[in-house]
Image 1 (tube, rainbow, N blue to C red):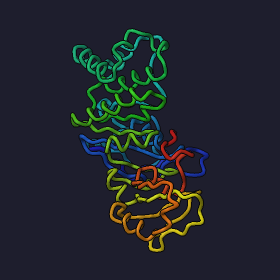
Image 2 (image 1 turned 90 degrees about the horizontal axis):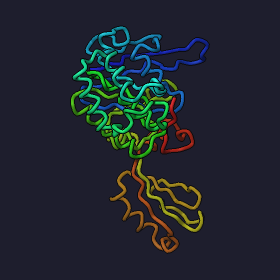
Image 3 (image 1 turned 180 degrees about the horizontal axis):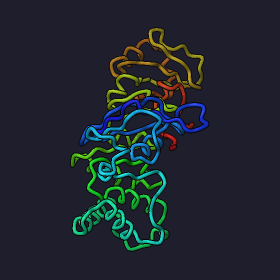
Image 4 (image 1 turned 135 degrees about the vertical axis):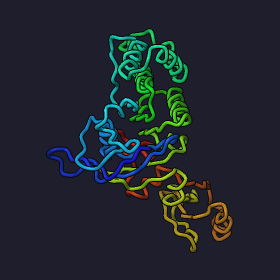
Length: 310
């Protein structure tokens, strides 16, 4: 198990902590997604776990031992940072072999592992090319593969799908699922909230270095999410239903509901003759971006579907 307990980090000269007493746990065979805005502390936390950034306080325990301070434990961790760490003059295969040898993997096991990753990430045709000749998305796939060539029990992927095509994104998500399915732990930060929902993972939500919410996607949606019924009219002069909270967004009447399928018939009945002016009707279910907005009061980097990197 990975246990993160009250970790904090303050950079010299900073006015606030990059991380402030953040705590959570990751169980074997599970995926935990770290989400937050620019400057939330995601990358700081991930680099601290592998000893690249010293913590100001707190502990990161892996199987009961301090992960940042144990080389033996760190050999059991695969880490793909935001910035690609590949040798540009070597081929994709030579990079994977080099990282595998650094991880102490025997050659027969390493060759099998490279073939397996090449199939999962569809990089077989890239392995004999120099990394400098690959596109950004292709390099990203090789970069992710390099983090998994070792015999790892914890995989840390910091925005592994940034700037890649939808096909590559699907490959990476499938790979994360397969790694968790074999019993390893996956710590995954992402720009894309729909990825978190697709993975149906546990979530750690950060804002300005603070843990603001954590739990499964379903529990966060149930606890912090909200549903709305949105009705489009020619203008905002039409009164909304008296028994439900509502507000106008342009020419759209937004009605807050708890159980949309049950409440919709009563709302329509109360609206009565006003419905002759109705142009559109949509039931909007809660999403993670709406949860984040409700908890912070701010949209995410001007785009409710994306989370900025850090």
